[in-house]
Figure (cartoon, rainbow, N blue to C red):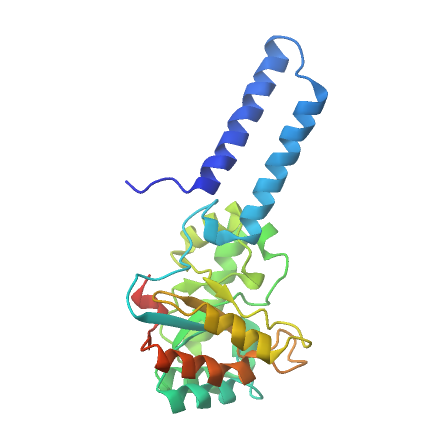
Length: 261
């Protein structure tokens, strides 16, 4: 049996304390106000951190790192885009590198040929929600499962094998997200390092430095091959050649993420 992640243990401990305080209030005198408020505040803070950092495993298993082998998984979110995705594919082809592309369903519906191009180039397709809903982590399990199924259908119709890897929009994971993903039969994906390139003002130099410092056996890097609203070129495009050079210098192989799932 795997050990319980510390973050999940902490959440459960807070919940157990809250139930104990509730029982005390019913059976005896109400608990002191200040400690009670601090307890609820702590519970809220811990629960929120679990959503923002799903790699801690607070609500369920998230694939965020691979085995300690000389392998790295490169992942790209928010595509496909005819302006930027081909440029990422070109850079990967020159380096002989593989990657996993987490695609937005509504974009794949408009650009099915790009989905096929990514598959034909030997890369893997993952799910990133149909509409890239920024409030996705607040949606119920049924909504999550239905959204996953809808996005799977679009990608399969475009020519991709049925995707079974799911990185939620924004990367946030709640207990609703975990239950919905489990219902849909997909693997939730996080990352060991974020490019932080999702805004137009991101510096490609800082992105390159951030990602190359994170390169180690089993690293799972999260980048963007397209902007969420297709209104700018993600800084990862300029940073990618530097990352690929560092991979070669460190003798790290790029692998499809499903190899670790």
